[in-house]
Image (cartoon, rainbow over all chains, first blue to last red; front, side, top):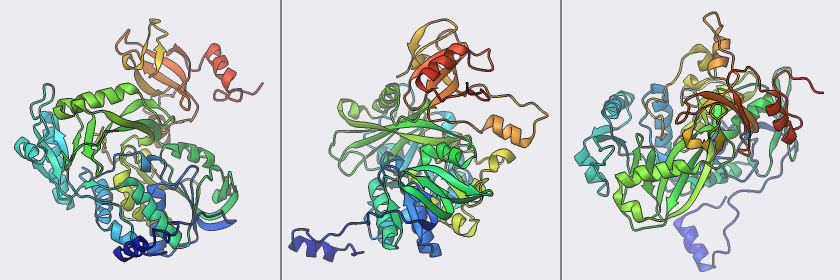
Length: 414
Length: 111
């Protein structure tokens, strides 16, 4: 792998950028791998990367039915934060956020992590109490957050309207080290590093079956032939239920559509991320100047990667109330992704009823922020059979009633 | 935007008038149930990519619950039927099989 550096840029500038190599190899599937990861999104690639980096496991294939990072990794609103209520969540999301801080250096790939700060607005008395509680919990967990009053909110976000007709802004939960990153670059950076370690990233290779003998996984069938493996990691978000069905078990997961949209680019006007959970909307401004907007999920099961229009209407209506200056903005693009939602709104990083199959799923509407931490923990789980980061996120918690209930803390915008 | 017809009051309306209530035909587990049965009843779901039998409520209308057969891969609606059933009625099964000849209701035998 050629290192990216200022010298490389200068050298290539001298020769009309003719010397940049492919960032990752277009690999053909081999007959057998030690580990197969299904799903070349952020979580799958991060898992492969940390398997190689932390545990020296490099005979790895990452299979992708579409193209690299073309699922929810390329469809989210790129928000990174770790202000969760429950201890296991705070641990894995804070690990993730801290890994994001040095990710560009680790991968030698600019993921444009921008710790610009995230505010979650409190717009009802209930939310004020909830966020104060979260701030106290975060203090105990070592996650730096604070509850701020309306004046401070106005200071941080001058374009906000504090006395909206329906929901005035009563304060907010402020995480100064939260922010955004370039979502595609996260997938591309991990892919480049994985490819450099000798791993095969195989696109347009859909898994059509999971082969097993005596309750132990032996490989997968794909549209590009059968591939054997010792360990199989399912990291496919919305289609987790489909893959689990092929392996012969069910999941406590339902797949629903979540939408986002961006406006036309405008001059810089908001340099933090604002989330308003009561009115179902969140917004940040991208480096290109577009306002990036996300809303709530549809209420029914859906695999179509497009959602209902009325959700966009609700989201935009709420945001126009909160940010009157965006009322004349034209919207540029809208898209949807399929998110896998669990009963307690917390992910599943777990062994499964089939020996050798591991599952990383259920990130629901908030997976992007967790990519490095999820990969770190899931790689440890796959390599060693246990990990302190993933311990609480096992499948068995649903039978035991030991939930990690984030639905109250982060029910809507996740 | 789904356009649904409520089988109770026969009003046809947009989905904003209704509220989705998740998978239909779940067997409710009582106090004697095991942990596994409760897990299955409360959390485990078919979550199919394709035909999905689900509960809906006509919230801003007659207020009644009903069942709907819908395709999660295409958003096609096969039909709505009464919630007072434990299995989809014949006309719903026929409508589904017109498009998916291989589809079978739980335990239904191939003919």
